[in-house]
Amino acid sequence: MSQKNNEYYIEGFARKYGLNTMSPLCESSLRMPLRLAGCLVLAGLVSACSDSSSSSPAGEADEAVVNTAQENAAPVASTPPASVPVVEMQVAPQPTPASVPIAPEGESAVDEPVAVSEVVELEPATVPEEPPTPPVQEPEIVETVEAPEPVVTEIPPVTPPPADIPVTDTANQAEQGDTSALGAPTNGVDVSGGDDDSPTLTESLSLQGPFIRDESRSAGPPSVPQGLTLLMASHNYVEFSWAPSADDQSVEAYEIYRDGGLVFELRGDTGDREYRSWVTTSYFDCDYTRYAECNTDSPVSGGTHSYTIVAVDNEGMRSAPSAPATFTLPAQQQTQPDLSGYNLVFDEEFRGTTLDREKWKTVLPWGPDSIINGETQYFVNIFGPDEPVYDPFVFTGETLQITAIPTPANLLSRVNNQPFMSGVITSSDNFEMTYGYTEMRAKVASGAGILSTFYLFNQGFDRNQPEIDIIEYIGQRSDRAFQTYHYFDSNRSRFSNGERHSTPTMEHIASTNLSDGFHTYSVLWEPELVVWYIDGIEVQRLIGPRVSDEPMNLIAQLVLGSVWIGDAAPSSFPVVYEIDYIKAWQQ
Image 1 (cartoon, rainbow, N blue to C red):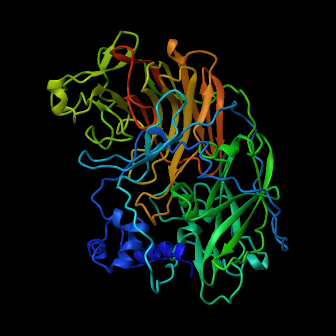
Image 2: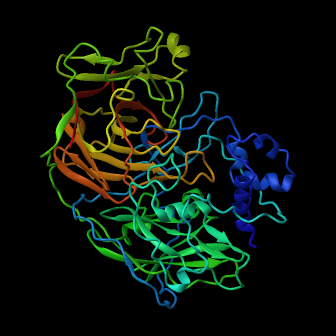
Image 3: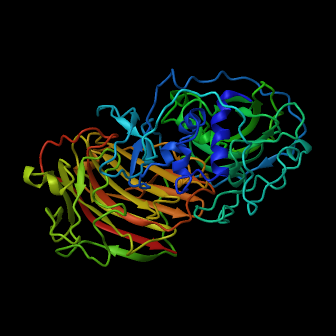
């Protein structure tokens, strides 16, 4: 058994014997022999025992690592191994709408809230061109502890999945050409047992881990990967998953082929981003917010591509290629929203003199004192039990202005020592929607280190956390608007809320400075479909069974300073994010 797979087996051992975040054995695990404890550090289990609160909030981008050649060397294209007889499985072509050309940027992500007293380890990130490049916070809220690889003796094999999860014989079925139980998306059918956003059958099989250790198998190559299944796709990327292969010892890597050429070798020892894909046997082709080579080698907008997977074990033996799966990407278009058959279900025009408490709250679910994304503003809760130190909400008679100012020295102790005070409005506990169309007309705020956001978010932030970022506007990128989609899956091997999946951060380049005037920012969200619009024209499109089917709230907020946008340095105060209306329609 290869040393680099010890981490996975120990992770399976910990799951088998209850060494998870909530387990009473967690404390005792820290008193285990040094060699095993060291492995638990590598597996993230010791970190999971810390007293961190769980999770997640507004969609700020993270992990922008474009042009990091030494970290992401592009594999040389090659021909896959000789194919064995397989049953071809296809995903039906999707409608062909659109998007506009975009440039690679930092990946948007849903980071988890951090208690005031905690120190969070941040990793470097590539920031949009003008702002400085700050470090980026990883999704887990606990500090990652690194330890040298220990020497490990016998580790028990990975525990099989729960009995209520349907599992086929991955050691033999694919080699016999039978893929009938896999491949078709199962959107809307939650086979994980709950607390998730309706995974596909293939994803549920990957809950076993990146491979299945089957000591009853004879020595030889791993079983053939099977069940390639579309998760989501846009005009220049696609995410898909497959069922883990089985081996008598361990699987070390999966080779991913597009149209017969090798595009990536997925391993579990090449960094956290790849490890997320490794433990969930999934892959993004092509994650252009991370890999510079995506600019020259990526799926074609509107094109149909064929994918196969080869498993490689610890002895270098390679399986036969998987049955090919073909995925069709949506094409770029400039459609307009068609609301025929839709009814207005939420209407806020901000014509009063104060916020309507039957529609809005002014605090996020994790509270005002939790710092997320390295942000430097304090969201003042004007509806809290104490008299607010500042009211960031100004009504003009026609609009709502969310304003931000520097914190006076005498008030710092009352706002968690944050240098700025600002505001957020959320419809949580008052209004939520599953599918529909929502639109905001607003004048976003300008200035360095200023972020105006409008997004849909599931307030069950400690579970699957779906989020649709309708608009993220960085004040110093005057003609750019960013859109992202996030969800967390059922894989609880590392984190209690699952593994985060985020699309590459999509970017729309406008023909004008968006902060100079009012514009509409909207999204159409329906089963297996998300379409983003600016001023009534489509700018991005996402399809696939992993589009959320969970209810979400409406949120708008004004952020000052973060690990993504850099330090706040506006030219003047107050900073103003002005909203004319927020509305929602459903069929």
